[in-house]
Image (cartoon, rainbow, N blue to C red; front, side, top):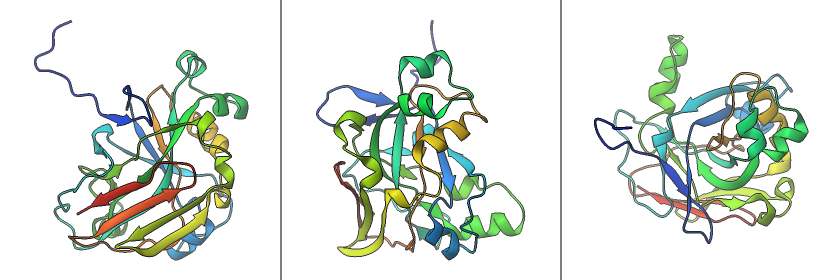
Length: 231
């Protein structure tokens, strides 16, 4: 097969491997921590999760200095556990997954930051418009190198936090998720056929706030590579 130009395949590093994880799609879940749901004016009740997407090329590698995003005066950080999907069973099916199948589809985990142009998101909500420009812009989904699930320990027992310029901004436990990881994967598979290479941002704890040019962010989850991103 010939292409008009060389295709670009976004990818994420893997801890201690030369191979990289090719990214197919990026799915995100909103308000999946009760405290964050409250701070955003929502309800922490266990309603069906809602999802949105970012383009695959929103990913960026760990340890880089990013250009500050354009068209925003209110850029917010949201640290999240990122779940990477792969496996033969997923390639064969991918839809209507059981909780067991959803668990088997997990390749590994990383630390991500969902950057949000909060002012554009607020405007979109007010006008009942899509969130794409608020969530799906360039470099809006940095991810640490992935740790295979077998090496990540008991992820449900891990803590999650974000520091900005050394100051703690966000902190919580993965066990605080309203919808746990297998439940999210299974529910998402009722909307989309999931495929190897998909990433899922699983939600952020309370404490989201604005970042400025020059800020340094460190996202941490126990047993995973620390994500360090600068503007």
